[in-house]
Image (cartoon, rainbow, N blue to C red):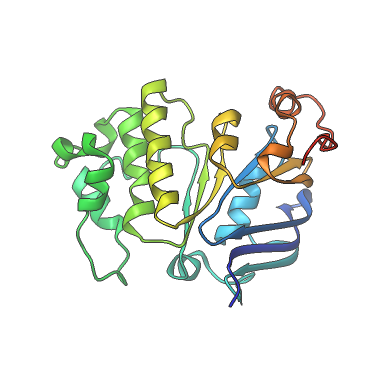
Length: 244
C-alpha cells in the first residue's frame, strides 16, 4: 500500500485563458509536513484549490492515497480525508462558536464532541455562545483551524493561516500545527513565515511562475534565496551544491 496521501502528476491549471500551474508534480507522504513556498502569484493557492477539488485541472492527475480523484467533488475528497483550511477567516460569522464547531464535525464521524478543539484552543471555551463574527481575528482563525482536528482528516492543507495575526497568536497557531503533525496527520503548508515553515517541514516545494523550481529537504535550501522570492524578485533554483 502506498504511503502517499496526496500526489499531483503533471498538473496544469488556471482560470479561463490564464494558465497558473504548469506541469506540477508534488507528493505529500503519510505523517509528513510539506512546505509549499513561492512569491505572490506563484500558484500556491491555485495548487491547494486543485488538490481539494475546488478547481479542476486542465491537464494531469490528482490522487488521494491510491485513488485518482481528478474529477471527484470536494465533499468526496473530504470524506477521503482531505481538509483545506483556506486563507482568511473561514467561519460563519452570523452563527455562534458552538454552532460553527458542530458544523465542522462531518456527518460520517461517530464522535460528535468538539472537546478536542477546545483542548487545542482553550480561548474558545468561554465564547461558545458568542457570534463567531465578534471574535478577534486570532480567535476566528482558531475556530477555523478546529476543523482540522474535528474532521479527523489524514491530510490538512493550510493556506496562510497566520496572515494578519499578532505574534503571540501566531505562536499558538504553530503550536497547534505541531500537535496536529505529531498525531500523524500529513500537512501541506503555505506560509508567510518562511523560517518557521522550514523548521517544521520534512520536505519543501518552491513554486516559481507556476512551476516547481525546487523540491527537496529544507536543509538543501538557500533561505536567503527564498526570502528574495517572497520580496517579489525573480526566483532561481536554489543552490544545493553544498548539501550533504
